[in-house]
Length: 211
Ligand code: CDP
Image 1 (tube, rainbow, N blue to C red):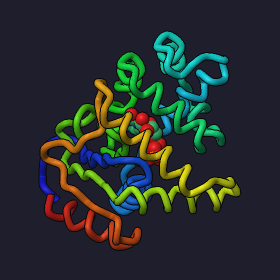
Image 2 (image 1 turned 90 degrees about the vertical axis):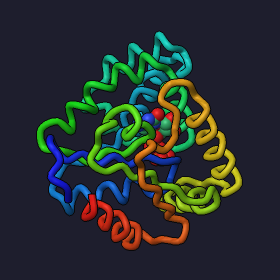
Image 3 (image 1 turned 120 degrees about the vertical axis):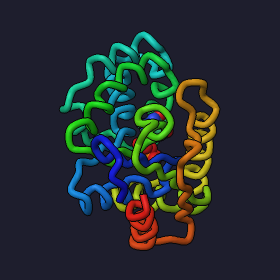
């Protein structure tokens, strides 16, 4: 690992269900630094807006929800699933929502360093991160993983629907004007289509070691 200045920040970005969370959690545990799933922030904002009976695409409602976010919101058990996916992506396209969540994310990594996963960690939140990984996998592989996750949680879903929803959300995340999903110029691409969790971890750690 390099002797760069400041806390060790590892940024992990990529499309839905690419394996970011599993990988980020393992790296953080291995390095004994905190982990933040930034997608949860957008999911929790989306949930608050839905609770208020408002439209997640409404900037005023979404920004108010983002400013009012608490730790308890992040611990909710209804942050996953198709409705939460759509609400998260809708609020995430609103610049004021992203602005309201910026300081928390930067502060999270400030003291002890951190691994963060999301869409814009390497491009916007921590452009100077020590290591940036952009984790991808084929749409088919990602949709199958998400479908298996839903099944494990007892949620009935058609693979074709999961695939179509995921493709639409990725396209929206990549096309939006505010912090679009894209690899940072200095990100290392990690394609997990043919890798299991152990293999992805080994590959990522080779870059941590080389960083
Ligand atoms: O788990 P999955 O990869 O499906 O999604 P997630 O990481 O929980 O993110 C849910 C949604 O939040 C994404 O589709 C993005 O629209 C948004 N998001 C974002 O804009 N920026 C982040 N740093 C993290 C998530």
